[in-house]
Amino acid sequence: MPDMIHVTLQYSNAVLTALLPIFSDFAKKLELPVPVPVAAEHVEHFATGGPVIPGYPIDVRGYLVLTNGWRFWYAWGHVNSFECPRNYRTLQDPDRVPEFVGTLRMSKREAVRLARDVLIKMGYADKLPQTSKRPKKVEGPFKWRGQTLPYYQIQWTWKTGDQGHYVEFDIDADKKIVTRFDSASTNLWGKPPELSVKPELESEYRKRVMEGKQIHRRDPPPERLPAP
Image 1 (cartoon, rainbow, N blue to C red):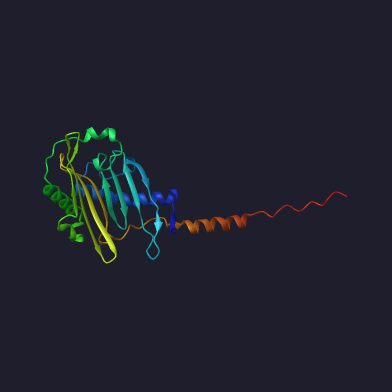
Image 2: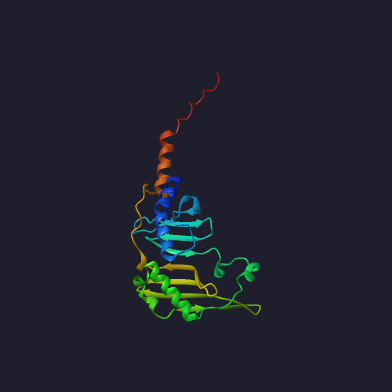
């Protein structure tokens, strides 16, 4: 089982401080409807930590939820995912499906072109030349009780040796926007930001706590002799 980062409030705040400018720059590039620069008062939820992969440096990861519902993920030196508050593909409540009925205003070809344009804006296109080829999968639009759910899911997958890669987009073909981007590719790996706090592993933390308990353990009380 891999070791984990021991997350303290101090460490979490250090990661959030380091990542906020990165998320701000990312949102600005894509002209997303989020406050820029993203500040602490715009944060609804933030999580960090995760496993430490043997043979690799300790990574800086972050999952950010803004007060307006936008979500961003960061790992291996880049923003690897984002999602808007209203995305049909990740809808969990079937009672809300009628909210996503709309008009189809994009063809599959136009949706793929939008995905590629967003990759260019993110600065990822040159690192992912496989996305210039035909996508592995394009699904949508969808039907619900005779009505149109104008959404596409576009996915590229490929391998380099034993290493798998994928890039995935959800497209709202009514509003002509990307509602979700997700990726996993070593081509995108970069240098994580410097932190003001050194991370501690769970194994190190447990060892330190156990050593502290041994140091501060009181000697047992002297044994009482039986009464004469």
